[in-house]
Length: 193
Image: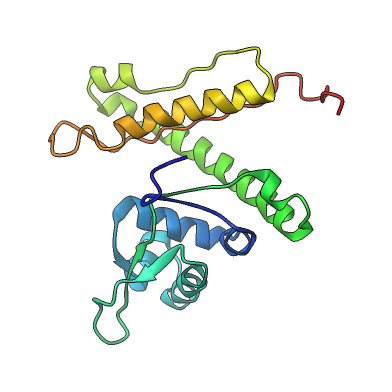
């Protein structure tokens, strides 16, 4: 959905490589902070540089990160190849290993989302009221078909794309995480096929 220069759609190989606790954290850290060495990332993520280097190379194998070539000697400088990735569960419907990886990865994202949102609750008192009023959580309910849900998600993505860099250069602007999650309320009552 996002601009192709900023986003990649994961294939089964990339999904299986990414479905690892340290790899998701490494990719996330590079996307948030920008370029970094394995040593810098190891310090930030409280792990060792050997493990960090190994997992960065695994992410490089599936083109999620790259060596910039700007490092000196063994000091390699890494960067993400894109700022975002997407996937569709239907891409992996016939691959049990990919489906298992997708299940793990999705749960990992939900855990990270909850952790980040809880962190905001902890620190928001230190932020100006205009930011506190603008940020936060909301939920709503709609009655839609699967196709209408897909259209809703695409329309929301288009809005997010319009705002992706709108504040760039403004000292008052901050990077903001925007999450969209949708699921049926009556989860125990799947539609008949």
